[in-house]
Amino acid sequence: MSTRLPDFLSETELIEACRKNNRQAQHALFQKMAGKMLSVVKRYITNTSEAEDTLMEGFVKVFSKLDQYQGGGSFEGWIRKIMVNEALMSIRKNKDRYPMDIDAAFDVANPDETLMQLGLQEIENLISSLPTGYRTIFNLYAIEGYSHAEIAQLLAISEGTSKSQLSRARALLQNQLAALQI
Amino acid sequence: MKDWNSVEEKWREQLQNKSDDIPEGLWSRIEERLEEKPVRRFPIYWAAAAMLLIAIGLGWNWNAAPEETRTVASEVTTAPATSETPLSQNVQESTETIASSPISTVTVSSTSDEQEPVLLSEPVVTEEIKQKETVAAVQPLVESKAEPMEIVTVRLDIDPIQEEEIPVAKRRKRSLFGKIVGEIRQALDGEPVNWQRLKEGNPAFENNIHNVANTYVKTEENLKRTLQIQ
View (cartoon, rainbow over the protein chains, first blue to last red):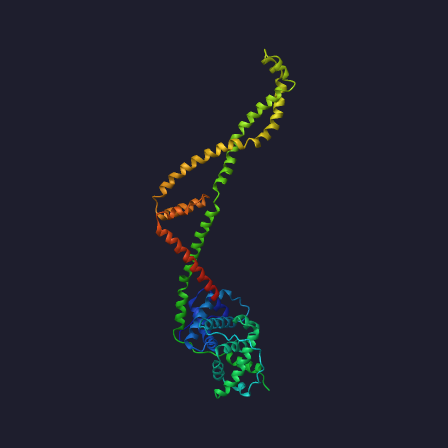
């Protein structure tokens, strides 16, 4: 990663150059964002090579859809959304179905104090220990900040299912904390 | 006492800026994908070609009534030619009616010198003829259209068909591509197109039509799939 890249004055300049299919600019954008985005994708897809493939597909989509970015919100947020969508599609493609039970949400006990003191790696390990369905909904709601209505639309499930899956995910995280001996 | 929202908020802050190491070779794989983009556009051209063929096919079906359009066209062209005959008839009719009028009774009575009384009454007669002509010229035009038109349409139909048959005979000698171009030209001129003629004695072309239809269906599926993915 020691390749010398041209310095782009601003993000707007970089985006403009990428829109003109400037390969160096596209490489610069990749270098700038790929690390963060790989981390995002890995929270959804635990298999490393699958996560890398998804990241690649995501970047191809970013470059091809760059004209659609209006510049209203954060550019990183826009890319992150594309990566999350790509990850969801990859999960769906690999027949890893989302849980479809429509149990009513149940009250989860208040979180253990230790959950607040966890380090970055421990949080990641804990989240990745969840089954795919729970993990997906927990990531979308708790980390990405989507609402239950948005999650329901994204995954083609009901809002009730989204809520109940989040409750179960939280309960599981509590249990896993003890199991992982963190 | 902490609740889940505050735990999740803290986790979000921690995870937000986390960055993983990018594996070697990932960029070159992306670059390869970016290079191969134009190749993926080919199915769209195929779809466009298939759509064009279908559109021409449909146009041929809609052109199913060419005879009617021909008679309409002949009405326009023959109308000025036929207008002469009813006019002359009108003049005769008008003179007849004049003959029955009180002025011309003089001519009937004086059979020996026909010319003299006619000459005397001429100025009066011509005035009346002019008046009646203008009235009569409007009415019989509409009535007399039907009779001469039948004759004219037959005349028009016979000659052009004979002329058309000659290129048909020539067309048989042409290549398949020439035939298709000829048929498309015919369709553009608004003439009926006989696609069956293309298939005659050419089973390979018939298979090709099925292949084009299959390709169209496949590309449509591909497009749907890609649009869904995007």
